[in-house]
Length: 395
Image: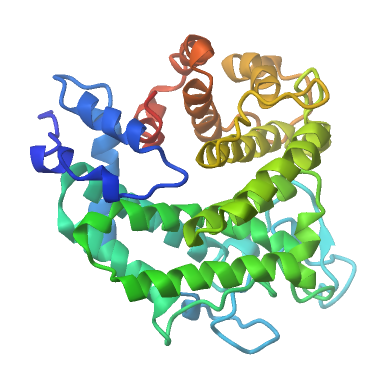
């Protein structure tokens, strides 16, 4: 196959104006440089990225107004989802109230009647198109990304209201729960897409101000509403991802003080409370899919480490009560290398996509140990060579 070359004009894109909070500009610059090499190992990832972006260019933007079921508010602009692990009660003729089967996903919670998959597609769509623009300089990718952002956040007819009062509802029990915030954990992709496409100048200062207000309002709801605040007190992965979202949102609208508070409080509230000195995450190991949730929670911890960099807090190396983030990564490392050694009963086993993100970011955050993480990455299945994460976290 003929290698896909990143145009020189794209390489010279002014990164000084590109504000990224989760992704690292330096990693992206390095990926661009590697892509210029003959037989670049990143070519498979770029090919897949551009193939996916090309398909998205011809698709209509996502909107919360596309769902067919409404929350109890009756407002189609309100986000609505069902609890993932909740099923119709087999003992009741009408199936109500739903009952919980941990680790077993109810297909009804994942179809397009509600917004769960729609918001995931929206976030992924934005980042895919934003990255395609960054790596190629083709403004059409940026245009479609901007259209998606306008549709979900700006246009009065299609925008989402900035709250999740009806997220992760349980039919017959509750109209919405704080756990619905796990559905919005990838909103950082939208925020960083704004930075990726900023050289195209498709969104003006007024658009940006409205977007910042949306995320400010969403953060206010997260902490000050009964539903939103209920997620704050969780001590497992839900609490960690809650912090990730509030920190990313606050960085976008410029509240460094709030970011500092979240990172500092999280060192004791999340890190020390969740990760044992041997690296085990007991609250995740109690689940029916402990490998998945252990990786999932550590992903959130590494993102918080990344956000700490913006406010000069070295969460990567912070030790609290003899515990630190790297212990959590290193506990999982031998089991990522040899999943059959995992000592806990597990309904799913290893998720290589999640493990890939974890180790790529760990190699960046712990350069002194990068070779250990890269050695395990070298054993991953060949299909992971096409993952866009390999473009994002070049260290």
